[in-house]
Image (cartoon, rainbow, N blue to C red):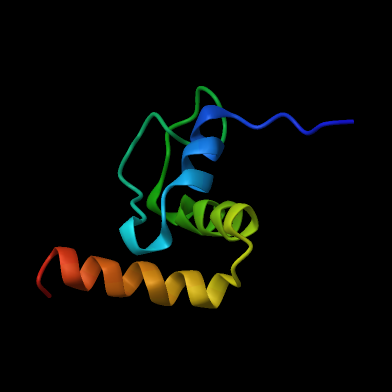
Length: 74
């Protein structure tokens, strides 16, 4: 039985980690249809991306933090 993958998941598979940032401000892209997204849901994004990329959550946190520092010149 094949597992259905959604377009966003396919995109996450294709984009290299060095090009990824995580964000939590998209109010309509929450985990539940019809419910407003909240910044606390970034943990759910991190968890799913970790699963998709087969990278430990801590490593993914570090990678995306370094990417943000680079992109935003922090």
